[in-house]
Structures are given as C-alpha cells and as structure tokens.
Amino acid sequence: MPQPLRPERVSVNQNVPLPSRLTAVAIAAALIVGLAAAGCGSSSSSSKSTSSTATTALTKAQFLAKANAICTTGNQQLSAANAKLTKNSTQAQIAAAIKTTTIPTIQAQINRIRALGAPSGEQATVTNMLNLAQSDLNKVKSNPTLLAGNTNPFANFAKVAHSYGLTACARNA
Image 1 (cartoon, rainbow, N blue to C red):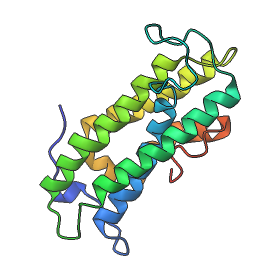
Image 2 (image 1 turned 30 degrees about the vertical axis):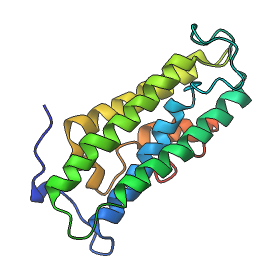
Image 3 (image 1 turned 120 degrees about the vertical axis):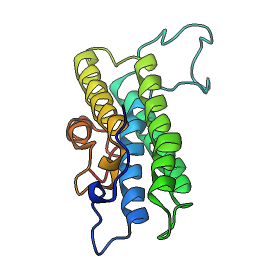
Image 4 (image 1 turned 30 degrees about the horizontal axis):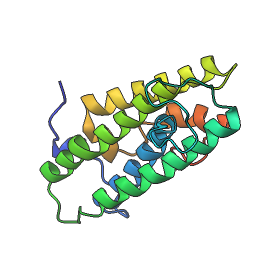
C-alpha cells in the first residue's frame, strides 16, 4: 500500500525547488521507462505483423534506436506533465501527478518493451534491465516520495541501461 506523502519524508534541496527536482526525477524515470517503451512497436512502419507480437527479433542496434527514441518521447511527456507543477504546488498535487502520470507512463513503457522482445542473444541482459526497471518502479509505487528524495530511485536500472547503450534512458540517474 502506498505510503502517504508526509512533509518530513519529502527531502527538498534548498537550492532546487521541489517541482524542478520532481521534473528531473520524472525525466529520469521517463528515460528509464523509455527503455521499456522502446519495444513499443505500435507504429507499424517497419513491422509486418499486426496480430502477432515480435515475429522478427530486432537487432541490438534497432532495439537501442527504438529504446532511445521512446525514452526521449517519454521525457517530453513527463516534462510537460511536470511543467504544470509550480513552487506553490501542494504535496497532494505532486503525489497526484506522480500517481496519475509518472507511474502509469513508466509502467506502460516497461510493458511495451517486454512485449517487444530482446535482440537475439541479448535476452538475459534485456530481462535483467527490465526487471531492475520494474523493481525500481515498484519501490516508487509503494513510496512516491522517493521521487522527491536526494537519490534517484531508478539508479539501479540506469547503471545497467547506460552500459548497454540506452543513453537516453535515465540520464539523470
């Protein structure tokens, strides 16, 4: 069950307003999720199948190109949602934005990349990355205030994703 947002749990850097920190974290989250969404494949510009999921495995280069593009798009979506928050936003408004926008966006991206499949020979690496992304997201689902803390809750995922080549994902981690 998610923990309620409590003022003493929200850590705010004196030099960075809370909405800015949330934007940075949300962007990082979107980037992470972008990895997951890379497998989206919903636009069938290069996909032959409309009823089957991942009939042809992507090459690693194709996978990375799609994943990084999805991360970039996800960052833009979350930035737009976070732009609605101001210095005067209440903790309830921030929590609502996290629960209704940030978390669902990230979860959708993770789901889409799982549906995409992994490049041939990369199944273990991609599965590990997605499991880390899901684990990190589950922590945020349980405690949304993690996004306002001093550490990025998606750092575990970012470490693996960046070394794999998903450089647009979780850039701020």
